[in-house]
Image (cartoon, rainbow, N blue to C red; front, side, top):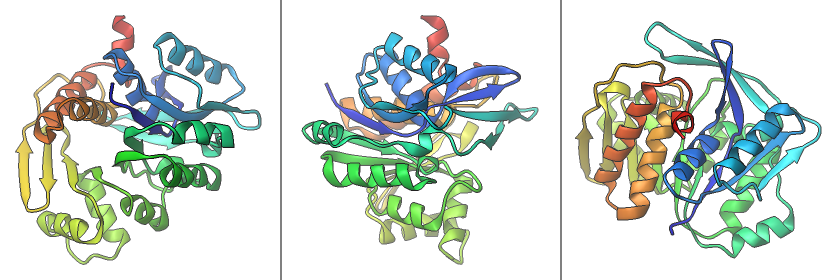
Length: 289
């Protein structure tokens, strides 16, 4: 079976007073496990009730916790989520929390380095602190993978130019939305807002072979050097869009691992993202088991 390493956040979204498991890495891990995959999750939780809940949820859904360590000084991550009248979220991200301190022992790194991963996945928020950033750099350097998937997920105040530049410099598959494309351009002082120009600039400057530009309810554009394909969004009744982007990533990765067909993978990502938007919480499949 194809192997995926997911490096990133374990947290809980507080939505209208209810707690939902969240964070891109754990969301994708749970989506993949539900569909029969066995991803490797690398993260950190606190020595608290939320951390115990997350570990229990992962174990109950057959996601290995061999590389989910416990930090005894910081609480498990959590985020206040505010929804507008269309179900679109804004976030108050708490720091510091356990996922800022992801570290692995030499033995854990050695074990991972003996695996051959098809994809290593990560984002930006998990790199906001030195400890987790250092661990990610070591993983990229020492753990073999066929491709690296960077899901940029820019959150104001939780990324830097250095982090974005490092990440893009090691990326094969890049996912970002229209607003994030403009944010990256601004970060690097690119004096254009023309989408085609910015995509071409990214291909020239960085090694990405695939760029997934998501457009919310309007679908996604798939760019490869010299080519573009637009995939329309699916019309659904939106409950909230929390986790829809992560669901897109999960759907894309699963199909891409199966078929290597980028366009089919983007369609599958659209489908899973749209399904999640019709429900509360980032991984509604868990409520259907």
